[in-house]
Length: 307
Image (cartoon, rainbow, N blue to C red):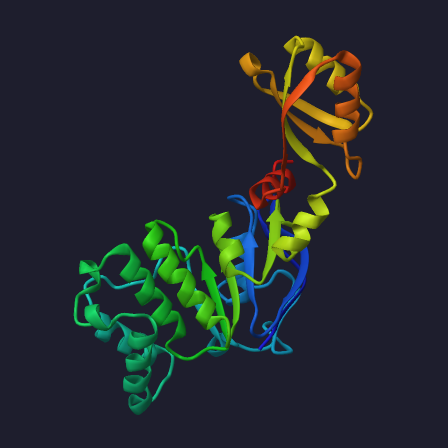
């Protein structure tokens, strides 16, 4: 089941948390939803999950507007603050959530068994939730989001506070789920996005600033070549001023003054390595190191969200 967000906006007082955004998420797709704190991610996800009312614009779930009817039965939602009753045993809690979702008594037992298996809870299923590790609590949260077998999963920071092993386990679980469901997944862990998501959407100050695969976003940013270079036989400040004056160079920073090591960022679609090499020949400087750097997702994220 697909999600279609159309010209969605939400205002809190004088602050526009979400500002006229539109995007689609398709069945079998895991969309990574990124943005700094306060960018509008959680507000958007809550509106899709129907925990917040749509102010302006619309959200279509399987072609049906959330304004016209309740579609919560099609959606599994795991908020950033995991909604668990810590005094309840895992099995009892999942049965309780399944009953709230309207499952029949016969179906409840079946779905709880399936979720215990899918989420790897078999060893812990009779423990009280308060006795579980953070990783297993997140698994219980995922199980409650999926207990009614929704077509859409909305997961807000599902790996926050987990150790690296737990992150890998939850990531694999989400990837497996994404084969059969539509998944909207927010996180601050950027390598996790590349490892888990089919597509990335970046929001900043309530507006979408990028939408595409990690490879597509990198290609769009590749116009700015980045090189780390070490130059001998020249004074640091003279090298700095001369390289900065080159037409193709946008920015130069000194990485290590003692070793005359610099980071050179070229202007968009203007490679600077040839000009730098020719300058060194003219000045009789020796290049002892020249390392090209691929644009990282972290760099793209920072460039798009620092303004």
